[in-house]
Length: 249
Length: 63
Image (cartoon, rainbow over the protein chains, first blue to last red):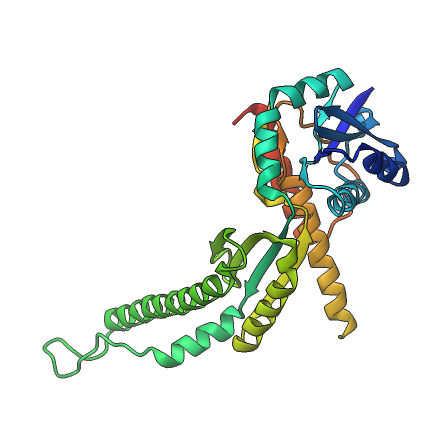
């Protein structure tokens, strides 16, 4: 029987606690969960047939629930959905081969949680605001060959669009800088993307100590009040999915 | 809070879950197995799912 792996958990002297928790939980399709360990790292798995690893919404949510519940009690590395191995022995060998890297990543995320911050703007409103502040023209009716023409109108339009884009990006950079500065002391580890789409101007992922959750929420509330035209969406705490992005063999 | 805002927040949170479970986390090379069937996702979710399946395929082919 194949085994699907949900997470790799740091279990030092808490095997009893882990086993008690696993008895209460169910995996995909109600399957029992159990642990496969090598030294102090443990893979949490359930039996599954390869053909039944279906990316349906119920399966994914059940999978996420197992990881979420475990993460509330243990330091862990979430494993990507669909990671299936053919036997307990193969899993033990995999844990042994990658022990050092697993330990190194477990240390990185120990007692930490992940938060996601997305910042949205209304692109039409932002464009209108910028348009109101930008006015440029190549047209100069007094210059030789000046005055309005189809070509000059076209150039005016393009130049204006370019200036608006520049102004919009400059404004976003200011917001990005402000948000980065505000959150930097809470989370030295973060992954940042700007201008994901015209509306989603910032995607930030933060890894921070559990004790700083409340401080982060307050900081985001303050930023939301400061930038009333923007919509800030904070999600979390999550298990550290985005900070264990490595491959093991 | 209005109901539609709560519904919207729930939907966004589910999308965030799907994104993390399918696209993030430790990759065990060569052993990603996934089938796509009976998917009941919202529009954004379908796009997300397609991108995730592409990721799985890349992992499987070692790109």
